[in-house]
Amino acid sequence: MSDQNCIFCRIAAGEIPSATLFEDEKFRVILDVGPAAKGHTLILPKKHYANIMEMPPELVGEAFRLAKKAAEKQAEVLGCDGVNVLQNNGEAAGQTVFHFHIHVIPRFKGDKVSVGWKPGTLSDADKEELIQSLSL
Ligand code: AMP
Ligand code: ZN
Image 1 (cartoon, protein in one colour):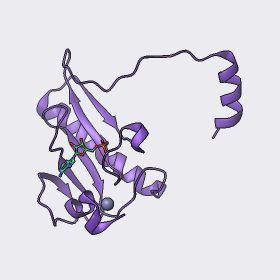
Image 2 (tube, helix red, strand yellow; image 1 turned 90 degrees about the vertical axis):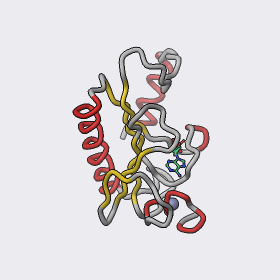
Image 3 (cartoon, rainbow, N blue to C red; image 1 turned 30 degrees about the horizontal axis):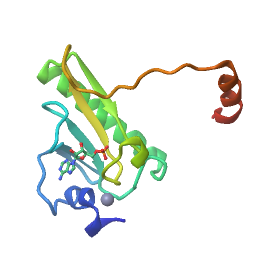
Image 4 (cartoon, rainbow, N blue to C red; image 1 turned 45 degrees about the horizontal axis):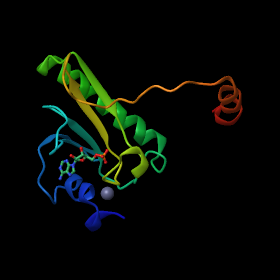
């Protein structure tokens, strides 16, 4: 999927209007229309990649560099106490728009924004297995 079928391709290309905070030849940075918190920002590459696994590593690096800038700006201007930088890949992981994007969400102490999970336990058996299978 890309271009006409993908809403983020169309937003990134400027075909659909968006609240744009930054644009260059590779990226558009916009405000999320359904913000988790005031200032919730999305980093969109202009080229279509469904997820982080499909994207060239250098471009992933550039996208996260922009996320860092957005986080710094939020901290400076909004005075937030923290920032979540997060990124969903696949429906099972909560992705709803299948064009790579990074969320940058300002956080305040005591806010009701939820991005958490209930911690499990790392068993010794899992640890041994995963050190073998997932080492990079
Ligand atoms: P995800 O669930 O990680 O795929 O996030 C998709 C995000 O895109 C959600 O936070 C939506 O609120 C946001 N979104 C969907 N459509 C638009 C749009 N037209 N403009 C800006 N943000 C959008
Ligand atoms: Zn797209």
